[in-house]
Length: 116
Image 1 (cartoon, rainbow, N blue to C red):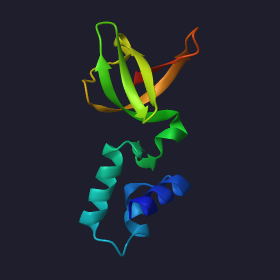
Image 2 (image 1 turned 180 degrees about the horizontal axis):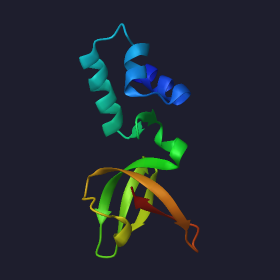
Image 3 (image 1 turned 180 degrees about the vertical axis):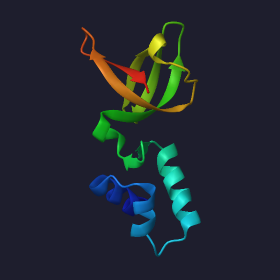
């Protein structure tokens, strides 16, 4: 069901009502649960009244894995950690699941991100 919802969101950028209508054979409570799971995992986000994939907006989901006095790191995949300066960390805490936006590429070709 999760994959079906993701595919529908990718193709249509639907509202909640459109999702319920499309998956009319499903229980609304189950559908709400799956939408919550997808949102909490950072797989979909709600912009105004429509659901979209974060990557379509230039966002990536990550988990804050280290916070130092002047910077932090977030893991966005098993092999990749990204740099976040402290003022771009906003109110995120260690282990928080966040959406990140790439804001610059530094001189050493490393990218800097900010928490959205």
